[in-house]
Length: 212
Ligand SMILES: Cc1cc2nc3c(=O)[nH]c(=O)nc-3n(C[C@H](O)[C@H](O)[C@H](O)COP(=O)(O)OP(=O)(O)OC[C@H]3O[C@@H](n4cnc5c(N)ncnc54)[C@H](O)[C@@H]3O)c2cc1C
Image (tube, rainbow, N blue to C red):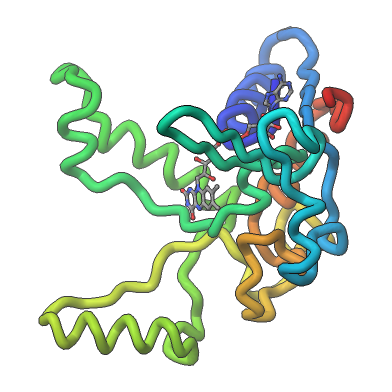
C-alpha cells in the first residue's frame, strides 16, 4: 500500500523471496497518479495546481496537511515523496546506530552496511562529479572554511552520467536545480526510475491514482 521508499523496499523484498519460494503475488496500490518527467510543474506559478491542503485538491502531487501545532508535507504519486525530495541519500552516522534501537545484541552498523550497499546501487547514489562548478557549493565551502570546518558534497541519488540499469528514460542531470519541484530531465533517482521498474520486471502489478 503506497509507493514510497518503505513500500518499495518491502515489495522488492517480497519479490526477491518469490524467486525461491511460492509467495503470493505483489500488488502495489498508490493513491497518487504516475508522473513522467514532463508532468511536473515548470515554473513556480504552476505550483498551486499541484498542491493539496487537507481535504482540498486531494489528488494533487503535494500533500500538505495542516494540523494543530504541526504541518506535514509529502508527495502523492507513484514513487511517493521521492518524486519531490532532494534525493540526498546519506547513511546514518555511527553514533545514531550505536544508540538505536537499544539492543546490544545486534550490530546495526554491520548489518545495515550490507543493506546500504545494495540500496545505494539500486538508487544510483554518488556525489556530483562537477561539484566545484556549483556556485552555492563554493559559497558553502568558503563559509565552512571561514569557520575552520569542511564542506562535503552530499551523496545524491541522481544520474550524472548516462543510461542506468533500470530505466531507459533516466537521462543525465542538467544541473537545473529543480529536483524538489519534480525532475524534468529524468535524471533524479526517484523510485519510479529504479525500484518500481525493477519490481515490475520481477512481476509486481500496479494500481496508481485510484484513491482520490
Ligand atoms: C521537500 C522534501 C525534501 C526531502 N528531501 C530529502 C532528502 O534529500 N533526503 C532524505 O533522506 N529525505 C528527504 N525527505 C524526506 C523523505 O523524502 C521521506 O522521509 C520519504 O520519502 C518517506 O518515505 P515513505 O515510504 O515513508 O513515505 P512516502 O514517500 O511519503 O510515500 C507514501 C505514499 O503512500 C501513498 N498513500 C498514502 N496513503 C495511501 C492509501 N491509503 N492508499 C494508497 N496509497 C497511499 C502516498 O500517496 C505516497 O505516495 C524530503 C521530504 C520533503 C517533503
